Image 1 (cartoon, rainbow, N blue to C red):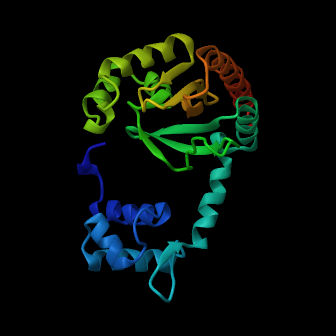
Image 2 (image 1 turned 135 degrees about the vertical axis):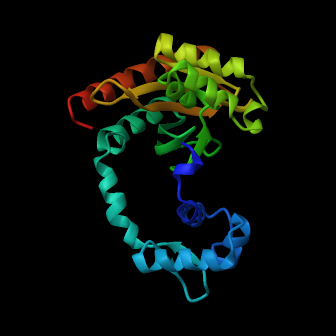
Length: 252
């Protein structure tokens, strides 16, 4: 989307809210302003506006946290097909069967955002927090979401990807995964996102048959044979088919 159609101060406000939620920097007005490169006065007014709406709570020591005023908005998200009880149940089944983390992602712009996840029970395992964002050129889930786009849009996403996306892979690797996802409705990434991490993804469709998300099993590559990963891919396809049938019948 062109920046000409966006509101700069609103973009800053969303960055402030996201920073408070992520906890990646000190949640104080001055620290947030420095970390986000926003004028302190602007950052202060943004926080005060969110505080008035109940979206942010400011403690006496100046620390900010998300407020309960967000709850009504979050509660309405339960109606989203990819956030329903059946989706959560399938994630739990997938993690119980494989022992690795499972997640559901959806596309937002040129990124895949994690909506739900069930972590592996093992102490030395990969964990992906809800809300985590990954560029679409990275991993199996990104390939599934890219595969639903026209070729010219896929080319644009690859062309405009940040340099960090090419540390362990080349554009040809991304295109190969996209073709794999289109041909087989399941795709694997064995070390191209990061050498020690694998991902296996299958598409999730909306009631109209359009891709709306990806179902993924992901974990550390160490200790898993190629045969085991292939078997998990088949399991993933079955679980995705189960969810897609439920979504088609209007029972997310």
